[in-house]
Amino acid sequence: MPDISAFVSGFLKFQAEHFGEDGLFETLRHGQNPSTLLIGCCDARVDPALLTGCKPGDIFIVRNVANLVPPCTPDAPPGVSSAIEFAICGLGVERIIVLGHARCGGIRYLMDPQPLTDETDFLGRWMQIAEPARTRVLHELAHKSPEERLRALELASILLSLDNLMSYPWLRRRVEAGGLTLHGWYFDIAEGALLAYSARRQQFLPVVCPLDRSTHRKYDAGPTP
Image (cartoon, rainbow, N blue to C red; front, side, top):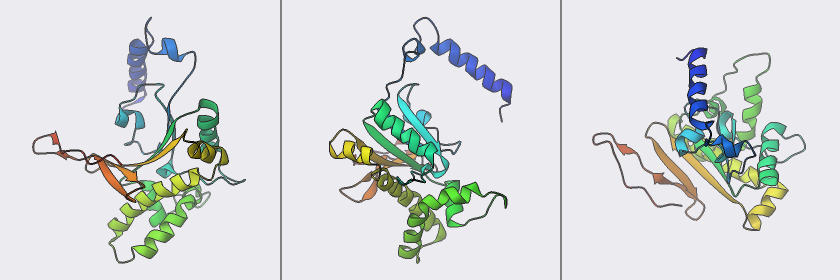
């Protein structure tokens, strides 16, 4: 694991690459103009910029445990809601991607709560946002294995967040006017694959399929939803 000096060395490398006379931040220092809001998980293995090959300034990122979006209510957690508001009403992004992933610790906690501390349990309170998805999965997939239900809940929570996004009136108006699109993506950590939700097919379909580990070649990509 890197110590703090490794982070400083990394920043020095970043500075040299991007803050030269013609560096990227010569333009970015004047403001940001991202076209995409990406709502992802805090998981250290799921870096949105790394996964998408984006440079600084390309995407506006909101990260929280299990990539959840709270519904628009008077008592909604203001951190995530304010970031969404800023991205839509302040920056005018054109699309929102909710990026979930396999083997999510937050979703596993929701399926089998084990409080980390008796004093606060902030995690348990936060994960209650996804309780409707949990209830549905347990009801409809009671005959499935625990791991199958866990994956189903990871996917269902993405759809719940997409539904919750539409509860924000200023966001819904943008979608209905055709100025904003919503996307649900799922990163399969075990296989290195990317799935996207197709509203027409009502299922997650492969966009980038797993690598063939024997040849290090990628299988043909599936249809774009």
